[in-house]
Image (cartoon, rainbow, N blue to C red; front, side, top):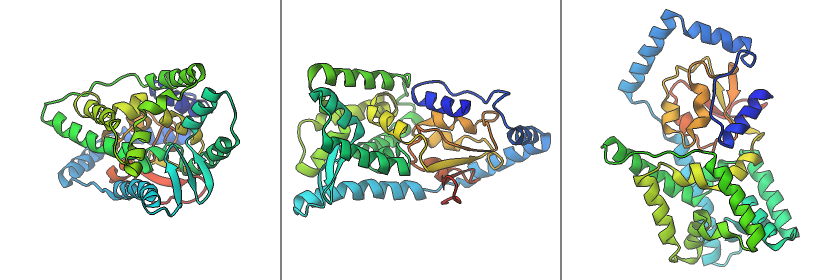
Length: 325
């Protein structure tokens, strides 16, 4: 329980740490001791060198996820353009085959702004919470959010420029997201307006795709510029309260990414590609609590770490059922 609470605390900005003496299981202790033997140290170095020479890297889950983002958002576009009423509205609030669906973060702001609990919003929020609880909370970010896809491409450009030495990443404290979540909720309560929705790039991009571009896209371009030239994944990592809300929703979700300590050679390829790398500190030598563990609730279930790990130490799984891949 203590280790689970630490994972939750990391979502709110706490720094990752190693498992303490009282938290480490006997199985994990034995594996760590075995890995420190000279033979195993030499073997790990050999494996890592081979991986770097072979450039082993899959894009399976990334490609499936990109297709998911495109298809989900295309459903809104097609439904509106051809008036088929399959999906009405936008990602922040919609109806799917007549069922109300509402982003929990937006719904909470609306109820705070109007000082009223609205039945349609409660129903829509409950539907969305159940859906994203099943697939893992922040999976919304990487599997449905259109801004996330744009930000991922911006990140690729940032990394290219960084390798050339033309830009440098400027990280912020992850606790900033928690502060801003409280600020936006307070503003909704005090002003009667959902202030965050005016600057929310998720809603802006979703509405632009469905109803056509507006001047608000200049704000989206500005945010992407920050992510390319100044701070890698700035909005998603340090600002967006939507990710925090979904992270809470999916803290105990069935779909998880499982980590197998015994298979891991600790080369760090997973952390290099992770969209929220603090959740993968567990893969560092000496950090794991157990021989088999699950990545924390801030994980977006993007699958990049699964693609990047040739040892298959990270896999998608449904807790209590055999692994998916």
